[in-house]
Length: 209
Length: 405
Image (tube, rainbow over all chains, first blue to last red; front, side, top):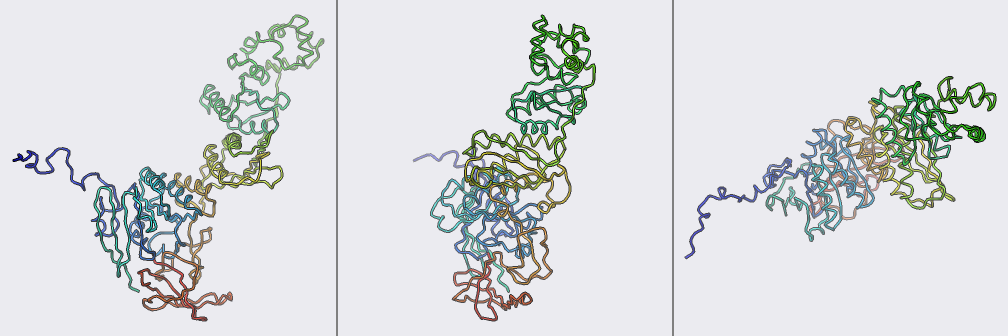
């Protein structure tokens, strides 16, 4: 009969060198403004100085609106929001309605995906903006790694919007989220969270007209 | 007065003038001689500003190195003595007039700025050093070799004034840099570019100014010039920063052929610490990182690609926004209705998705002849996307114009 290990009688937190999963690394984060989502994410929000990958399954489901509270708060703190190669024209009246003063918003309309990633990388590395939102269809790992490193260097919020086809590949992003349409809601599925766990929440979408 | 003389290693009039403009950062009195390729700076009045001769000389030497030039210098109380000392770099700077004669006594005669015939004649009569020449009676020298010789010696020793016409740097900056052989690669352009930007930095320091627009033109043999116009968000004068911007832009530019000549031009100058508001960086003037970033982005992506947004007072949704150009407003009227984040150029739709709520009637443009009366709806597609649609009243056709991202 195997003897019970003396360690097994100790409470977990008293064993040297053992941490629980969620205590692994103190993740610096910024509230998403959605309590349910904050509760799911390590550090309680969007990671600071790390890349967050957002994969909306279709467009027009509130995939940018999910960031609204965070972006507004950054603007309130006089930080800049940089949209890099968004798929359409960011509509000035909508930005203002969302509480983002126009002088705080920069729209970089790069012609090539590569230029867009370069611009995002420079902006992130400088840490000059509060948040960078990049739309890129790059499949490879390497460009994302570069962005992840730049985000670490600049310690700002970094969001990359990628098409669903990229879900087949692994990702170096610290946080990887799929956004799904749901009746009067946005489905937020956390696929991977460094220092956290996977999970799913529904965020209500205001559809009142 | 104390003179610093630089023996110019470049024997080209444009280059010497550019060097004189560059030297303006060290002295308010600069002059040059295009026959002997010498440049003089009166530094007696700059010593305090640079906290001493050693620091000043170090800065001049570092500046010359940055320009890629190896030049000898001499320091003495008269221009001619300073020029003489450039030929004898081992001689320490001479600061006082009464130490001058002794300091140059042992130098060989042939270093003096005299006609070879005069030097030859003096050597033939047994005079070999400056000291031996200065020991001879001046009146006899004047009779034998002419007033020119004694006049030169008097100016050399500071016995008579030696007025020089100071070089006045022009009010606008133009620098031409010719290549002996056409340059075919961008790499080949970078070195001279960096050098002429260092010259420009010296000029800007000299007049205590900065720039916001820089024109760089590359002349080709049988093509129109390639012109790069660089605009910086904040006033700039740092050579390396400007170089990084020009380089970024140049590497993104297709040169139609080899380059024969670079022309650099600055037409307007601004104060470096100008507090006037600029439409790009209102409220961000102290945020050097942000404006450097904008410059970097625009240098590579083009001015048009880096945009700020503004509003226009127009009811038509596609005309209610603009790329910020200084004339736009950025405040919404109160109670402005909700709008989608993405604006699309209207595209006709065949199958109408489910419409939510009541329409918003937008009428505008009739006074310009572009009559457009439209009913806007929010709609939900079967897949779950929210669209912004309108029905054109005149034709009853449906268009998609926005997406609620």
